[in-house]
Length: 285
Length: 255
Image (tube, rainbow over all chains, first blue to last red; front, side, top):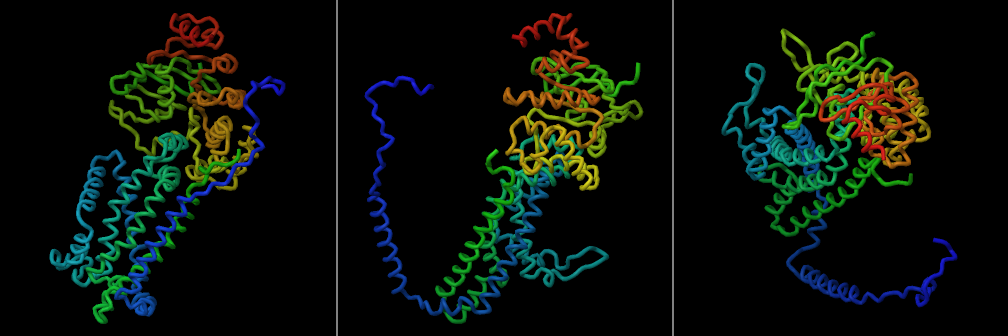
């Protein structure tokens, strides 16, 4: 379009007029209403039967600290086991071998289809089925000694997690363009090498958000291990309130710790996501 | 006549009911540039993929450098090779795809270095020097540290060519290398391919770029419905086609 083109009359130039600020009175009104409701809830709790001094005092006692540390250890180890199993099951599920495929599908069906707390109780009580366990002729031991609360919780949580993680991993692998696998094959890579070097690094970008979600779920799911005497933070809190009857105060203590841990995990997720999105962020050419 | 580098004999391939290739036979000699033309669905891409076993043939045989590809003959039967053996045979060919298929999580340089280091196990330092030389050859030395998403389509395809060359293949397969490019980017990729042809590389090129075929190809093969209809020098096949089907295709393509 040339600068000398003739434009029609009747359409004034508005480019010099300022844009007036808006009042947003609805936002102020809703903010005020919400503050009133929050103040009412806060007042109710302040006047309720909660001894807040107990919350402060028990927040950092050694038993609770040990408990939250056990919670984190269990969450990390069980998640690691879950991711390992998840990757193996996902690869089996996507293989062309019908035997591996069926086994993988069966695993997911079994462990996703039963409640986690039931699986934990089964692992913990496995001595009722197999009094002694081991490798025949090499090593064996009494199941009651081997199946400690720690090992039962680890197996129960990790194997259950593997069933969910495998589906996340499968989605991640399928999200990578088929051309990537062909390009890897064309430079002489086998299936496993292509998965490891080309497919997984790209799948990680897709699976990080759901896996972070699963990990946060795992942190909280470790509380179920309290039913099999694993001394995580909820179990520690329960032990204290059995002694001093400060039930609500100690539940608040445990709750605060869970909130803290989850709050720390969220920015970590952001860091991971940035790491795995290399090459995909839009940037100036 | 000398032994061909690629010998394709009576290769057939079906996808369900669809017959992609019907008893196709073809020779490609070392140093030759062969262009495969034809409508989509004519089988030219499938034939190309049968050479490096990305698509294994249902019957027939492909020999590369005297070695039967993908299968082994024993007691009058063909046995499929293991995935590892096929992967090893693929080291003799390089392939360039229509949609580039660069690894998006790796820089241009790392895309090129990946195969020689991870597959051939060569020392990284030596490979990087060679990869930089290849990037210079395709005119992209200054883009070594860019990710594919930061490159134009033409630049990505040139990196893809360098990636294939890094494996030092004896045969290069091009599957419609310019079909996914904006028109103004086609020239830079064809220029790299011309230079490669001039250097003596054996090339099989599936293409719709008849100008390129006319200029560079030693031989042009026209395919239709899974068979080779006509084959000969570029001047003959493109200039004075004998077969009615070739004539019809060319008059439809050349507007």
